Each structure stands twice: as structure tokens, then as C-alpha cells.
Length: 362
Image (cartoon, rainbow, N blue to C red; front, side):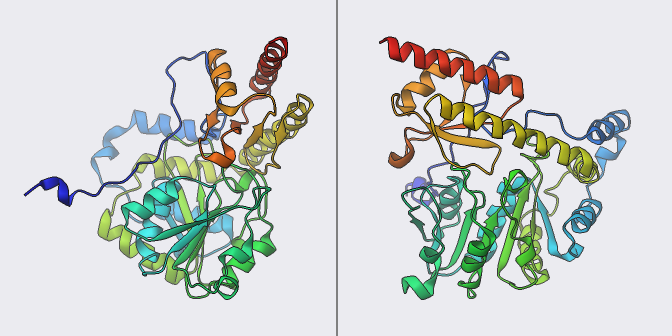
């Protein structure tokens, strides 16, 4: 017997490169260019000076963090689920809610982890093409319109890598039009623009909203994510989580997450600063001849008519600027550029000017 016959084989998610060169301007993984809230440093200092608590298992319910998130979002603690980054939360949601035989739906240009989770959990799926201008069209996800039932829906809002946000009324059309399946709205970038689906929760028991601390809270290295939904949905998620691994959220993550949630002033100042930088960077790119999709995220998606995405990526890298490039046919000439500090984005603009000047000379 060949043991490989029993192996689950999938094509894994390709994560953004983590370069070792400190001189590289790293704008390829949508990390926050600013440090986390000051209270995070205090928590880590306290833990360093008193490591004895590390011998104990953490609170499996993450009670203090859950209660803080519930207060912030205006829901009950029973409506909050936390996990090791939003990736963990979404994977658990796939495992919990997408158990039928019908295909789940998500956009063809979107977060590429969705197809990986579907394959890992052996969930049938179908990708739905974005419109010509790279937008999600709600009617494409409605069984009453398509004539085909589906086993669930997931999409980011704002979408990634396009950065385009779907208006709340159109999000509601998708949720309302799928009463027999769970709709997951992945709000990894909602703190930088767009309308959150959280106000829809009292009306729809099939809605799950997922958030992350990795982008707007500068805690990508700590791995904290959460979901908000009605109590029944969250109870099902917890049942699966505690059957899988009861202690997924470690002590440091719980304490650091709490410190971040409690500093709303710093959070708002940080996200506002990034949005202001983005809103200055976009017209500057357009002046250089770039087409830039309307972004409500902490990144922009842009292409230039005179240089291919492959070539531009290579030339930026040669000049120590790292951005993200995707090879799917419809978007292969686009680059996704994370918004960094003002100084970093100015350096990027000067570098692009140099590249375009060289291209014109040749």
C-alpha cells in the first residue's frame, strides 16, 4: 500500500515575502508602519519581569479580551469569538458552517486563502468573477437571481487586493438573499474605509463579521483575530474550536489585545494617519500616469500602461522597494502597494519617477 494515497494534497497559500535586508522599504504584506498602542509595551515589560505565569494555561475563554471587544462593538460577550488571527477564525468558520454539498461562493479576485481553506476542509466552491471595473456584484451571489443554491458566501469588504469597498446596502442584499446559508464578511481592512456590516447583525442570524488586529492595530506578529455574530453562530464556532484546541489564544496575546482595544484614541489617530497618507499618495501616483483603483484599505492597487507588472516589480525590488504582485491574468499588471509612512511613500514616488524616466529614455 502506498501511504501517499491517504495524504491530503493542497496548493498552499503563498504568503508575502519577509525580507532580511533592513534597508528594504517593505510594502508587500499590508503591515502597519507604526508601533502598536503604548499599553502593549507596558504589558510586555510586565510579562518579561514576571514570567512565572507562563507555567499556567491561559484563560480558554479569553474573558477580558472578549468583554473589551463586546463593549467596543456594542454586543454581548456571547457574540464574540476570538482566534489566532483572522485566518484562524475564518478557517474555523469554514469548518463549522460550510458542511453542505452545495458550493460556497467567493470572488475570483480576492484573498487567496479562501480557496486553500476550501480545499483543506474539502468544501466544494466556485469563484464568482468581479465586474469589468473589479467590483463585487451582489446579484451574482443570490440564489433567487442565479437559480442555483449555494452552501455559503465569503468576501472581504473592502476587497483584497483591489481595495474596493462594497456599500452596506449591497452587503445587506447578499446577506438577506442567502437566508439558508452563512455569509461571512471579512473586514480585515474596514478600519481604513467602507461601512461595517456590524449594524446588520440584529436583523440577520446568518451573518458573521470577521476582524483582525494585524492591520489597523499593528499586531500582525501577535496573531489576534475575532468574529462577531449572533449567539447561536458563536456557540457553534466555540464548540468546534474547543473540540480542536481549547487554548489557541495564548496569555501574551490576550493581554496585548486587551491593551490595544482599551486605547481607542491611539487606534483612531493611527488609522487616520494612514488614510491621510493614502489619500495623498493616490493622486501623486495618478500624476505619474498610473491607474489606481479606488481604495478604502491600507494599500492601493495600481498599474501603469507603459510597464508590465512583472517588470515594475523587478525594477522596484532592484531599488530596494518590495511590493506585492499577483499572476492571475486579469490583474497581472497591477501592483499592490501597502501604505507606509509619509517618508516611505515619498521614497516610493521618487523611485517610480526614476523607473519611468529610464523607461522613457529607452
